[in-house]
Length: 586
Image (cartoon, rainbow, N blue to C red; front, side, top):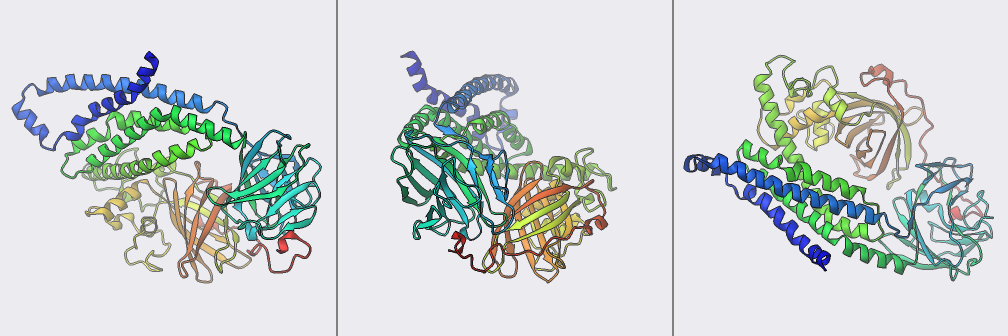
């Protein structure tokens, strides 16, 4: 009873502690400091006492938070019926390569059916099993999803023999090399996540889209005396899938576990939400232009912002994914997390502006002015050396990249090579990244790829949001230049920036077209995914990049960029010739 009473009282205690440690800070007006100094001569002593009391409350809050986070992490590790899945390299056609620990399968040659089977299967009479396959790339819907027995061939598609049952993205169901039905489902293509549900008690298989339609039962009468394995059939070159977790328990049991978990972790999530909203209010208060720099710094450096919030978010990131539960928690926490990220970006920008102004006053007029060892002053960004600060903190993208873009409207899917070289960002590149036209530029308002323009021309010493953006990006941004080849005689030149995990560059093709690419880099800078947009037609689509070779140095000469090996002409996977007696012909 005492434990239950303490548990019920815990949310109120947490809310009270949060209010106590932040209320004085949020309620203080900009003139309070001056009034206290004149009317209360003993204010410094009282403030020290208040700080000690506040610190004690923060320590108590931090201790409770640690216990809540540890309980959530350990509770999520309990049996939830979820089992990671991967593909079996011993049951994989030679046309398919596996990556990411066997979770991702990629088809290499074009127009050649091959199947890969999951390592673990589902034993008969063990209830309902669900698993998900994400279609990273699915050209023309020519991917088979389904199940098979241990005797199925991997040299055909799923359903290409009597041991397999599969659905193709063109809506048809196949078994024993025969089309069982031609109008099942709405089909699927790149970017879809398809959920499959196998009932091993009655021998039925269903399909549906995650977060979308459930297409109902596709196959009945599947073997109830044999182990059935998830399987995927690939056909078009570079088609790629990733198999995700499986839920090896009845759906009702999983939903029941989810309800229990939501109730069990409700206190932790409510506290997390309250803490994040409190931090958001503090950061909003710090944006008040009437506040002094000292008051603003006091808010931004408060222990809630710099200690409790980072440890809380780290603990939440360690919680293993739980069916249904993770979705509920994400819907509650992600919106306020997004707001805080934007507020922190503004706070960092304001701090960088102040640091830049201080460095400009004390650093002299020479090239060496600025913060020693902390980067490069804005006036020197246009120099000949790459900023060591940006190169150390942000992603290193030097080297050769393989770029793949998906088909979009009248633009076919393409693959080509680019060679990136890190350099100080030009004014045009910064304008491109910030979405503002460069001064005197051309080509759709983004300017040309010249690297000679000094970033200082973008507004250093001016006032306003545009100037702030220029200064911050100049201090924390690295530029990229390069060129590549998209065919035997088609070349492309690029220029852009890397800012944090954001990569932005403009492609200028030999035949005159331009394409804007925006994406997010993986940690370490070896991969990015994002979107492209044709600047003339406005057509947009998905694009990915993988670094295939890292450059020797970030200061390689431009001449080395011209040694780009030729690649075959880009072709749209799946040309128009008929594929007789083949599911891909549908």
